[in-house]
Length: 170
Image (tube, rainbow, N blue to C red; front, side, top):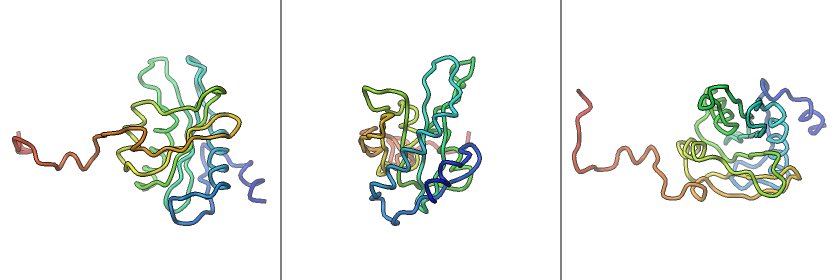
């Protein structure tokens, strides 16, 4: 019944829940469902220029899932990646902490990997959460944000001691 309900979800509107323990260590079934949801989100991609569909499914600490797809624009730099789309939806609903994100594409020979901008966007919300890079057959490679973006710059770096402390008033 849970699978039938998942298949009928309108990914652009409805938010899913996945049943899993509160820990960051996800069960194989949860990972499979998260990857499936990223593959379903990929079907909504708007990519008339690149023809490169990407979907993402983001899992919050309380097991809600937010999905996103890439949305291209004739002015190329205004496009939005699937990962940032899903994360922005979650942030707009008040979420700031995440367990995992699954990313899907149509690549058969390699795992899809987030672009540099998406890696930095993920890093804004922590370095120690999971990213599942997948293939259409459902196989995946698990990495952390920190592994995808080593020696990263994050919000905590802004408060570190600097050579010159410049006042905020100009």
